[in-house]
Length: 148
Image: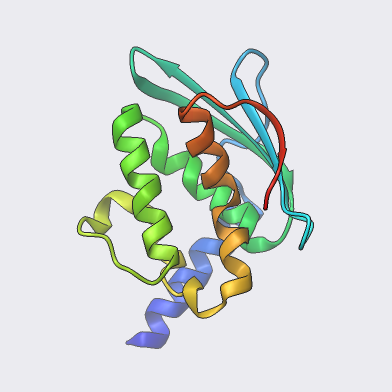
């Protein structure tokens, strides 16, 4: 059973890498660019908020399969959520990456596939780069930043 779940998770990750959702930037959206200098992952995330609700999340960039697929998954998970819900989901994702299952796994959607990333600590930054950009945008940050 464990191998079947692992295979399913790998399938989801590879599908989001090959066929990313919401990829491509749009003029006029709040935008934040983050780069991880230690591995070369480079991602730009955009968020469009109307009436306290996220109506669109866009991303673009280059990097490893974990970084790029995670950006795609994140974009699908956050669209349609309130800013408050999105912040809670982002916090839940950070906990997941640390190896802690959140109370409500369902609201993570496909992001649950990164559940075992804590077993590969160097990959945690890859998985969270786009999520950190989205979280910072929700707090009002914009522009270019290097990840620490």
